[in-house]
Length: 326
Figure 1 (cartoon, rainbow, N blue to C red):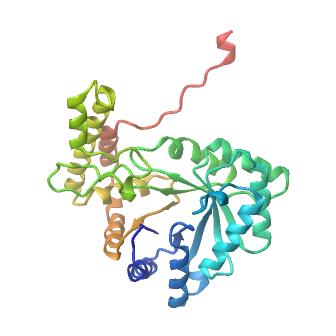
Figure 2: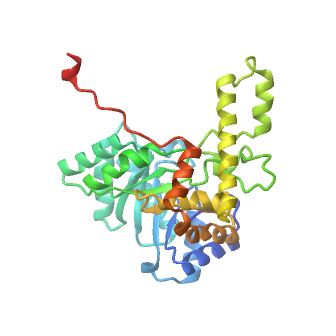
Figure 3: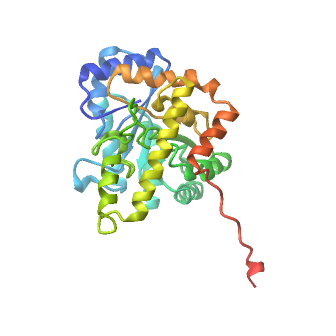
């Protein structure tokens, strides 16, 4: 799991303890997401280092002059993370977003970090399949350690990369998928069906543009075409609301919440080796873990019904022969 902003130290420790007790042993963090707090909790609990896996990120920083993927910044960032976490090593260092200015420095710096024993492995986040393959090629060319995982957004409304391209990366070069954002499609556990979108500023919706509500859609529809959205976007928003209603109805039929349905759907797909969940309380994490009980009920017929509702199954574009164009 990862922690949402505003979680107190007591809540964070309760979440970690529940995670460990439930068999979860991977904690995805970064400088911006609770490195210092996690380090303190790990020291208090006294868990064996072999009992958990820590992944943290390089690239984003709280200071603008410390962003980027130069060799200097990568090494300094990893050393600073070790100090904040109070650990001897990090299991996986994630390079958050590619830096086109210095692709060679990234692989060489990560090779150095691993050789120093500061990290065991490295991976990527929000890289395209082309960028991952380029990094892999550079690693092989210069005898460097290759990345092992990509962190990518994956949910019912963001599917193409994870279903079409990352499985190929896994089969060819062994890069696994650590999926994040299973709730980014803004499914809310609403009972009245009125507002199916989470409010603006929600942590769950910051990765997508679904932070508007049905009320806002209707207001913009009244102003269109003079409104800022335009008719196409208003129609898209209404179709999205209809899909969310159908998903909520299906979740009710299955005896679960829309959130649990979303998590179970993500876990059901073969490309996902690891699913990252956010939590603001131990109770929320407990409810999310109930999604595991739903997996046996996601039969072929249920999955087909989900595809009918979503209408967005990704398909590879047809290959065009250059000979046919002559």
